[in-house]
Length: 524
Image 1 (cartoon, rainbow, N blue to C red):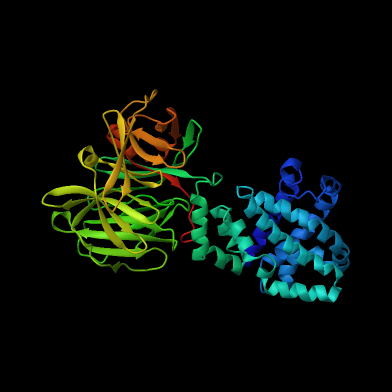
Image 2 (spheres, one colour; image 1 turned 60 degrees about the horizontal axis):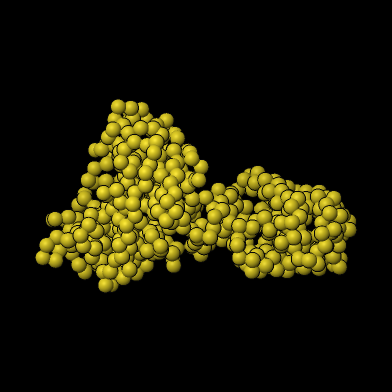
């Protein structure tokens, strides 16, 4: 860990210096955060002093934030270096430090949290930063020995410098790769990043519709009939072309698992060799074997936003494909499956599936004198089931589930129209039907189908049912505006092994598309 700490510290100092120095380049932008009492002339007149003192200030900032190694002499030599070698220099700079730190910290916070649209939240964070600066400034009137005593005290407890809520406000706006590096720098940071509270807060911030700065991805699967299923991802972009990233492939048959994707997770495999793949970290972990003698099973992945946990729901099926043994696995917490109470109503689980606001929905067949089609809802937190009857008529033919205006919607594409049935009241089995005409799509061959909707933009994502030519493309269609934009994805044929491509392209089908996939911290 010490070698990793030594390698990362110069990089972090460099990034902090970059944010600090850059804050003075855009005066108009800085004036929105810095109050009127900080005269603009102060910024210009102190540019030289800012650059001169920034390195020393950030060194002390890093020195107090990051819990140093057990070898204090080594850590002081690597992190603080020449600044602490001269106590006279520190003493002379205390006055200027207190004068400049307020403005520097404001500039730093401005660039870290500038994605936030809540001005009151920004002011609250900045006020916390000013309290830190005031504590730093009080050392100017202390003697040299008192400074050394306080410094040792703050070294022993690095959390005294920055309040934990301020650290969390900064961390939830950083990418996962940066947070992974921070695990090596401080025990306090490590425990904070790996806490369930922070993980839940991070997902909520990433999934927020107001957060337009966190990248989101499309995950789509293509299947060659009777052979393999291939998973790809690409950023949701407004550009006419995008780069597809290949993740995995696995054989498909009636014994394999194909769950929907949540926050970049994909569950696949068989009952004896089920795995969970993380598209962000691009690696998979083996799941515990299901305690059942039956090979035919269904697994559904759900997320509880209240407790911040992921759960896998597994059901084995018996005669007439009726759900028998029902088991649940809490990811990251439990190491074995646990059985729950059998569902109160008889049903046969089926696809499609989707998880919305802590409720997992999946298609099912049930019996009321005769076989009917419906939707089963599973509350991920309470682990309870509820049956919702599907709308009559053409609503029984739904092939996709999506989120529409924050609610569950069943989707069917046919007769040149997109049919939606939005769930109004689950207890009363009440649905609202909406119908939209299919757009004219030029430059693409084949029949297109609506696979999902993007709730934040009001767009439908369309793709060809059969993949007969390259590059693979998706179409974003906004029915209210009548706008259509096509995105071609490069790199699919180049990444799939040649034996799986070539002459078999006419057997390729688009299986599923999952929008708004965000970064996750599970297993970090």
